[in-house]
Every structure is written in C-alpha cells, then in structure tokens.
Length: 127
Image 1 (cartoon, rainbow, N blue to C red):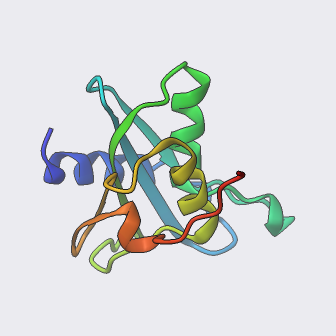
Image 2: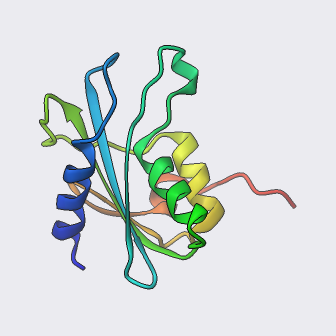
C-alpha cells in the first residue's frame, strides 16, 4: 500500500470523528507489518482531558486485536473537512507509537513522509 492510499484511508476515518467541541476532525490509518489497516478518529468528550486522538484510537484498536507490529501511519486533520495542512501527532500519541514502533516507523502527513525519530528523537523508556 502506498502513502497516498493510506492518506485516503485516513481521510475516510476522519468522517467518523466525534469533534463537536473543537470542530477539528482527525483521521488516522495504521498499516501493520502484515498488511492490515486499522483506522481511527478523534473522539472528544465534554471533559476535555478524556478526549482521545485518532492515532491512539487506531493503535489501541490494533493492539486489542493482537497486532503490535506496525509499518506506517497516515494522519490527516482539519476543520470542515479541509485536510490540506499537515496535522502532526501530539506528544502523547508519539509516546504511544514509541512503545510499539522503531525509530524508522513511517509517519505520513499531507506534506510528506517522516520517521518517528524525526518527531521524537529522545523518547521516554523505562530502564
């Protein structure tokens, strides 16, 4: 699966976003090493700290189905379906990615492809 196909699946995932407070929909499509795709969207809550990002939704769905080997994730986000600007993963999502992914894990945004190490070169790890 190429980057454009994965970005299109992220756009589809954003259609299910529950973002009635911010109006900012986010979708993610997570590609596993065995070729499966898990989609996620952001889900807001009136108690804002309980909101979950699209990236973590996709990862947690995959892990709950027994999959912990990931190849890439595509992320889109924006208001009113406008996904033309890049939507970078937040620190919490990057830390969750680092739990399951190597530093060369691919993060695909609308402005290009990056690695986990590009965003999180010094991640927290229990020693």
